[in-house]
Length: 334
Ligand code: LMR
Image (cartoon, rainbow, N blue to C red; front, side, top):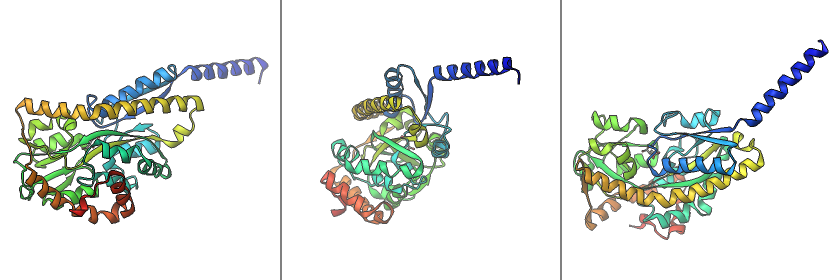
């Protein structure tokens, strides 16, 4: 090879390296809900903080509403590195092989956000996130959504009202057991297909926190919403481990800071967002909001309490006990 071409070759290599050094590191953050939800807003806040704290060296592109990946493929896309960051609901970690996360789906496990935070922001939560490392996934944080309501085209006051109702659920065995305990027929459907499934009558009803019910317009195709707060729905923010470990140390710590601040934000707004979403559903006049009487609520709890025992084999008796200890409440004693 002539000396001239060696010099040109070296110059080209240097140019390429210079361009690469200037290019931001891109993090694709995919999720399935609307941008205008607690998770959607927190993802945007993380993107903004990541940009600021890394002085533009990291660009987080947020893809809401299953536009990049949906329930069926997002975990696989993360493991393959096609997306770098997700925040799936805690009910969706079974297919990844971490079925312990389904513990959060146990009905009436938490009375309020304070009890919940003693778990998600404490040692039990940290131990759960640590279980993900084996799967090539790193758990960064828990983000709240909220307490679920039940919806259907018939009023759901009493446990017997569920009999024969086809209810959409997420892919969680605990949710399946919950619906069966009520006498309903659970059907797993990806989040992005729920509106259509309700509209066309593939299923009769569903459960979700009000923020999802409202932003996905599910209330437009459900005549009744029972404000039951019978269970919790929240998220774990996860990244592809190889990608995260491969980041320069200063970038990684800036992103950790951004995630810590976005988490505080997420968990500050979630409660109010859900209160407002339920008020908007009510104001729309399209769904009637049903409040349970104390007697009805007790009957729901009695019907659902056995699910805790039944699911010990699935999620771990020790884990359930450690949550009772952290919260100070144990519905299985009912
Ligand atoms: C659902 O699938 O019902 C929800 O978990 C979607 C979400 O991410 O909030």
